[in-house]
Length: 301
Image 1 (tube, one colour):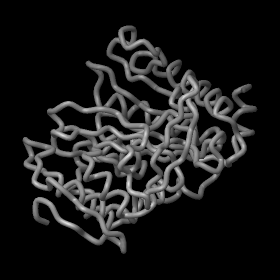
Image 2 (tube, helix red, strand yellow; image 1 turned 30 degrees about the vertical axis):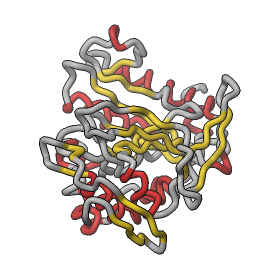
Image 3 (cartoon, rainbow, N blue to C red; image 1 turned 180 degrees about the vertical axis):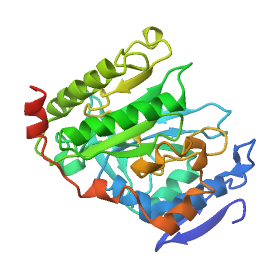
């Protein structure tokens, strides 16, 4: 790739510019590196983005520069990229981008979209989430081992409730646990069950886990965040990139790996080798739809 060039990606022609722009200065990773990553990871990432409204964080001058969130598609969005209209509480409307092709991801990379955040529901079932999610978010002073201990107890709890959870690194310092569900529950029902499970975890591990929403009151505990289960809330998508040194990505894991790895192990330069070797560990999240009725009954929710 030169600095500016026209490419045909999976049959779609688009112009890519400023390809030598450093996005990760310490690592010498450029916009070209980001775009190439998105194109190569597309077969694994796109199924998890399919028909989902997306939100982005853009870093036009790299991870050290000014960044901004983008919910609304820009006026210069190519006509071949799909959008989904959503009316906000204040009556305004956003046209959310919905990525469907490798060219879509390449275009987003060209906009320096380092973070791709996906809704928990799809456009055709927008009020019914596909997942119950837990975001294990460490506070300053908590450790990765704390996150691991909470995640393993969460797995044990899900097992006892007859549910299957699937972990992935957040791409930062935490873990996300996805529980795929049948599409018949409201966000409120999902969130209430998540709150019951998170509260139980914090009762069993009170020294390291909390559901305290105030950052100032969490101390050094890991926040067991179930409040992401709200319409319009998002999590970093599987294989999504993060604006941190090393260019880490949100990497799906086998449960037995959770205590053996570090989030920094998975980057835009290492994850593709793993994907070629073992495929998409998160594939079951797309199909393992679970009924929550028994779990809700057992917790009195």
